[in-house]
Length: 231
Image: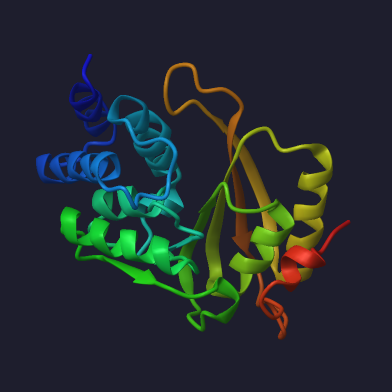
């Protein structure tokens, strides 16, 4: 099976249009060909699974499928946010990234894929003033307690935070739970997922916003990482 055949297989799994499928292929070609692509997985036969399939597995979550507004924190090369934007054309997707170099790549990726519903937010998440989002997601960015502090203020009450993780250890999960309790989030399921054959210990950690986040969060840039909320 070629990588293009694999994209077609993924497209069938998620009932994606032919246009979306072509744009996903264009994204992988950009990652392969652009020397500024901020990822070590650039070869399409690997990237189709590691990037595309892993990103789109979130479509199994009803809150993601039905979202009108989505933010991808620490978007990097655009995963999972850009594949979700290409799959969910009615959703407005913000790719939040503080590195200007990565932001330049994300801007090129939006242009190449004609993802009119995506935007690059080139600033630290702690400084981003948007609120009331339906879904916030983060993939391979930081420990759960840090991510919860980033995500909670951005969400509308009733919104959902999704964190892509490998096999999180018990202490990280406890700290994430403690942070959630302080910031108005309720801990939901931890979904074991297998986005592609051979993927191991992949999980999606779900949190829902049950009440308003107290004032003062997130704390000023850098503090969540230096002094994370914990159990």
